[in-house]
Length: 53
Image (tube, rainbow, N blue to C red; front, side, top):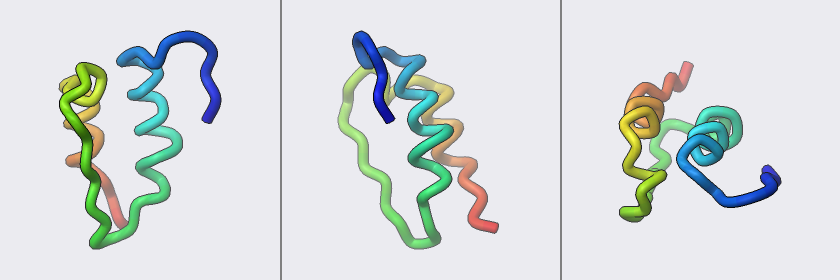
């Protein structure tokens, strides 16, 4: 994914939702540091609700 400008909270959320989550499989481990955009409530919610169906 390519974005123009800074990687802010909204662009990171879009990356997580549209690029990262669809590639995860059961047993995968997701690790994020304490960057502000990684700590957003919506990102935590999205990563906790991964559906491996």
